Image 1 (tube, rainbow, N blue to C red):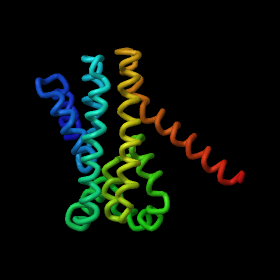
Image 2 (cartoon, helix red, strand yellow):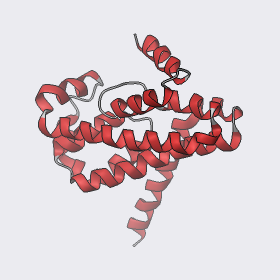
Image 3 (cartoon, helix red, strand yellow):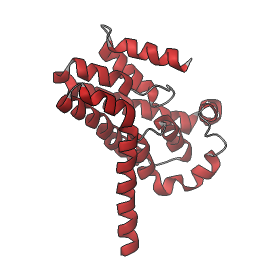
Image 4 (spheres, rainbow, N blue to C red):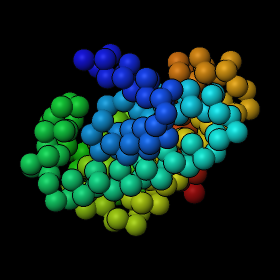
Length: 193
């Protein structure tokens, strides 16, 4: 089923409504959809490199708005909608433990999840369910999702088709290493002071 969904998503990238599809996939991926918008963003930027920045902006805006929907699901529909979504992705049992520390590190958690392969929808729902400050959630979401999509667009714009294989295979690893180094730096600074 996941493979059919992925193939369907890829088919949207070459269709006449590709920008609508990109915005729609980016929107729903932030709260429920399993396929990341990169599956559409990558072929669209490669096809229209002069529109790389507008594609990245569209992904960022619609992803953040979709993230707000995930936040609202967590805040107002946790038991009815959020709990089944978290259970589906295997995070339901871990949620109580996760929520107890969430607000202490909430901005960083949202940022890290926004740029790494971690399912962003889990974080958007958790942010609403734990009552993370909405302004903090939105700022972290804009920064994270913008960074993620604009880096993809920049790499594709600058390097073109040869970078596609690298992005599709190793982007998650690169972002994860970046975040580990960033957090390691903050932890080091905190303990050296």
